[in-house]
Image 1: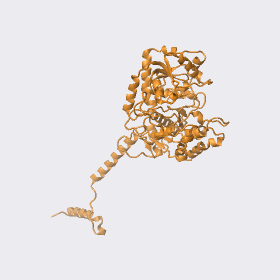
Image 2: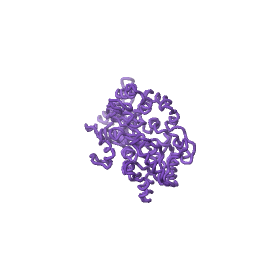
Image 3: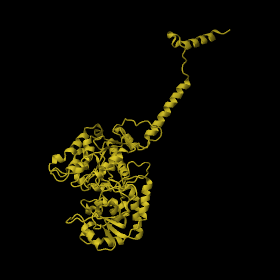
Image 4: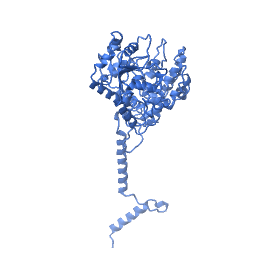
Length: 508
């Protein structure tokens, strides 16, 4: 016989089993066992661990200092290799992009600029020649940078539609095409109409207002001088003088040493590889190249110009048996294969100023494995600080322009004084630089080398990250200033903040 206490416990247990749902037919529902709750708690715990590991890897600072500090990146197991590298690209109205490209027949008087726009700005493919690779060679125009960057960004592996997780914001405005269409207009309001429209459109966007444009960047396919017209009139548009644009980072084929927000990037040359193997083969070919001339010059004279020493260069070259320059044959100047052949046959390539400080030929020369000779620091050393070594003596020769113009310095004597072992080291450094100054095929997959586009985007992201950190600390990040000392900031070594006297002071 069971005790009263035992019967009471059984009765209570029975009541417990039937108490749930008793009023609706007495459905018998068992309570979930404790192990179920422990299992669910464990799953939630480990899910959170995986989430924080995936979101915290990469550039921590750039994650914490996004425009929206409380936005979360998409959930991923494992490492997200795009953390800190996401780019948001604006989908601009066609008047700022495609409509300008359609005006290609009007960009340059007397020239059809529609063909250079083919193949995402690379231009028509070139047939196999003596001095160009069998594939990946194009007749690329120097003013196609906006198309080239836009095409690459469309295929950028870390493109995002969410501006809150972007490391930088890209504005694909074809400012250079607009400038080419309107430079000659006497009506300044008409010349500035589209640039002003672009600036007004941007400042109304919430993405812009997050940081006032300090996390935005643009590409201008012409030199800065075409976009900084003053209030009193003169050459170019006023696009880069607008306060909104002054906050951005502008990439241009020729930056001003006296502005704080523009940065020089390489001119596009003629070789656009699609694989690592293409680049390695080309570099090896340049190492084995027969260089029968001491120096070469690919360029014409500038009669009456006091800004260049081309006349002296041509005179000295013509009187030397170790110098080569353009033949007088019609069309040679416009033959990419002929130009590259000249550069590849020389140990040194002289790169004087021309219409402006910089030249596309500088990057043709590097592509050819030819050691460049500069006559002004603005031609390269102050321009391309993201892409070329700070130690300019490691890859180039500097002969002050005034030494050639006023003191009749001999270019040949200067070059012959360089020991052969040093020449070999300099050439190897030039060949090593080739990937950094070329623009690869945007459709290329599984490449490991960083080209000029990659180097530029990395530098932009780094600059934006520093500006965000400064903003979070309640200050303005200063990596440059407007004025005579602006260029010195770009030459500061990593970690240095103070500028002072510089060897280039006499020339800038």
